[in-house]
Amino acid sequence: MRDLVVRCIRDRDWRCRVGGMLALALLIAVGISGRIALSGASRPIHLVVYAFSTQEEALAQSILPSFEEAWKAETGRELTVEAVFGPSGTLAGQINLGAPADVAIFSTVQHAIHLQVGRRVQLDTDPVVVSHTPMVIVVRQGNPAGIAEFADLTQPGLQLLHADPRSSGAGEWALVAEYGSALQASGDRAAAESQVGDIWRNVRLLGASARATMTLFELGAGDAFVTYEQDALLARERGVPLEIVVPSRTIVSRHVAVIVDDNVTPAERPAAEALVQHLLSDAGQQALSRYHLRPADLQDGEFPGIAHPFTVDDLGGWSQVYEQVVETLWREQIEPILDLEPVSALLDRGK
Image (cartoon, rainbow, N blue to C red; front, side, top):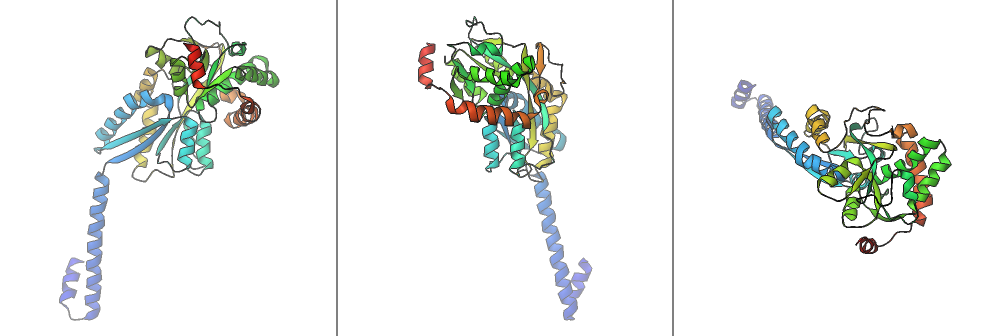
């Protein structure tokens, strides 16, 4: 083609000269696009990960740095991962409003479903389970109220904290644990709803997330609250004076990762997919276990330390539970009559 261009430019035939000039323009365009492609192939990848609050240590201190190193070693390309942490439900709402997450790690699959409804994630996408942790009760040292089961949280006079089900996956999981423990024991839905109502009569303060609720407890507010085993163990490692009560019947929360299809670019998708696989790899699972998360591949009955563990599937799945327990029972019946107190009042009482 290059010879044709040269010959036609010298030729006096206008048709040949026009064809030659077009061919020359094509050569220039191909060269430019080739340089652009090569430049894009070497440009560093930047991923944004949104993750629920209690995953900050595991991701920021271990998982993400090791993934960046593994990606560079395998591909030769630079990769930076920016992480944003907060209440799981709040993060899902922000992503639906346009927040630039490429990968989201949620405490419940329901929040991934919110992204599917919002058309941020494809409807046929299956969120990937990456870890588990049971719900436990955190109490003051010495367990002065003698709390052993969720039913003990109904005692008159207790001052309970609770992660807010409106924003927090931990709040939803705790609510479902309070409901499901009674339902699993009795088979009676009315008894389960009654237990939840009696527990929430003692709730005096809501935290935006599991981590925010733990902070309130550290500051002296409240007698007890329900949270992830993982976060309770992390707090104990930090030296927070607390005791961890594992009820005989408790739910095991299941956490998921999903790629945000509406945000991730073709250049970023291989890295986003690799990050999800890194979470599931032996190295990723071992790192998560060091931060007290239980493995992704646990099946029913494989939860040591719990007499009668159950999962959300045992209650009919998240869609059913969300409608019955979160939307109908809590939002319609309990939230309107909550008797909350100012933070300062509970902190003063805890001194």
